[in-house]
Image (tube, rainbow, N blue to C red; front, side, top):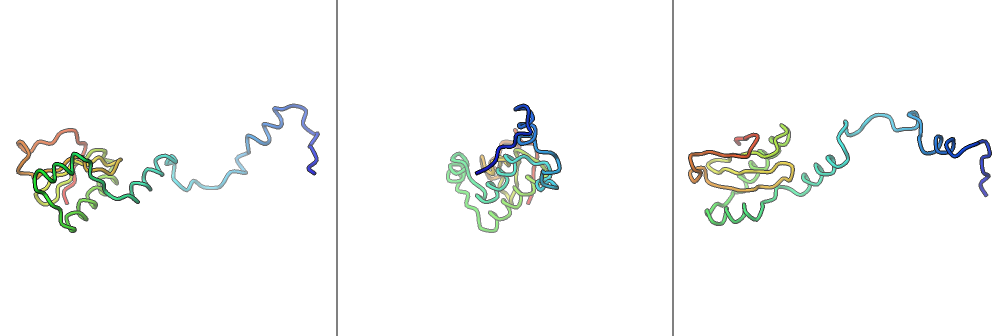
Length: 132
């Protein structure tokens, strides 16, 4: 049976010792370099899932008879990875004559088109572009 420590005169002393551990008892070093748990989890999940295509993007690919080769798919994923490293949130990724708008945090292709189909080659609502 555990003996109760009677050296405490108040609940605050108990809470101070057991609920607020000193800095010395915390692990040394910060393994995630200041990245929050939520951000780290999102990064790991997106890396594990691979690139996704939204329903809209899939429909656009079908409507425009666009098919990606395996090599183009790899280059698209490479472009998304580069955009992610640069901190881009919504990126235009150009692969050959194909243009993809990708939401980088969600790792999702939002829309896709052949560059010749774009009106005046103007792309909006992006904060970066990657050409691969």
